[in-house]
Amino acid sequence: MSKIDNILANATFKEHLSRINEAEIDRIYCLHGIEHLLDVARISYIINLEESLGFDKETIYAMALLHDIGRNLEYEKGVSHHEAGGDIALGILRDAGFDEADCRLICQAIKNHKELKKGEDKRSLNYLLFKADKLSRNCFSCKAYDSCYWEESKKNKGITV
Image: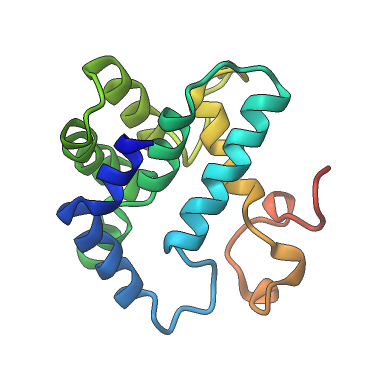
């Protein structure tokens, strides 16, 4: 997966991830570091296989690794990490060797992973990222469960098998 190695080695990726880690050093809620990103990648890939969605493994891993890349700008400037993340991801994806069609598809999923549009295709990359991102959270064992801002209906209260 040379494109994924290119993302991991990318200076912009590493800088944003470092700033996210610094900003979340004392955070008691869900973190957005490499562990979360890899959880989302692995869950996405499993869903992709189980549901025969047909997405390329590098596309899935790139999407997952970059989906929260704008989080530090949300902390620093109050901008949407979804929008900022899609913009930042575009340059990283191009540098990593993804073609323009894949760049657009991945960036669209990043920009839309907070909420799904009504009637979103459950076989889309948007839906896959949204679902995997939510499933990656272990609310059932979270120390900050009671003070979490997530609505009760969104919290993962068990493991979905």
